[in-house]
Picture (cartoon, rainbow, N blue to C red):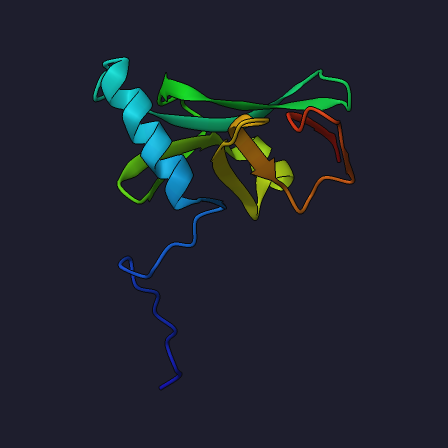
Length: 122
């Protein structure tokens, strides 16, 4: 008899992006303050535009047909499958300094980024 390779459905899934603790805390705060419905997940994606070619999409949204689903620190996250090539390995953080307040995107796939940090070229 030959060897049979089996895969386990309970294998650990690696998430395509990561959220820092600061980002998780801010997202939970936004979810509570804005009464985001329970059926909404955090949408992470890209869209054409911005000063470098692509802009990041970050907001709460309903699940769409072509979405990948995963969870990071209790936050349900969705991403259009076609966007993964641009976002794989990206880290989202939240800064609350005097000169800079907001979400930041550390994207290893970006060949260049703009000064505002919200658009990039791939």
